[in-house]
Length: 235
Image (cartoon, rainbow, N blue to C red; front, side, top):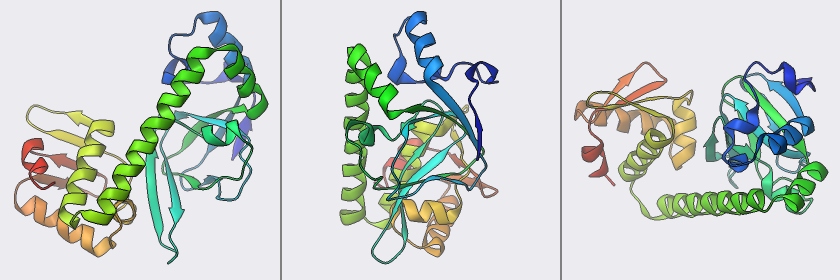
């Protein structure tokens, strides 16, 4: 991990402009936030923090993607979220200084903009809009987590895979003429860990979906959904 504390040297522009949390702030307010940012670079596969660590502040993704996960009692990785540019982690530990209850690892080279806890708490005191947007984000993630738990406990494997592909298409998909292309650096092992199955199972089920013409697999990182409506029928 490399640390660069000069936000003005960032090649990607002000990350505040990419973050829904700061949407609607005027240029003066965004400049103030920029002054608080410490920029960090992480290589693919590097841990940003581990479960049990004390989180330093709000970690804003300025480039790349990360996965947020926990370990089950059996020691298996369970992915909770895949986050990308404009998303952030560490928000709950800002409100109350506690140990992280999840792990965060990069799945691409990543640029993080860190706002330390005390600085961010001052921002919350001075901006009601940031406080409201933070609560909205927390609520949205809780709903996603409830949906994941329900899926793992009640749905068949085919249904879980279809739901995962639909969710990934909404967040990371690119619409083509009659299909949606998902390009995301998730291994088959990552995808299996997302929905609680083995790598062999998800590889087999994806191949079946391809045989049925629902999807097309292009290498190991690209999945083309040929028919969203047909995929929905599997849920």
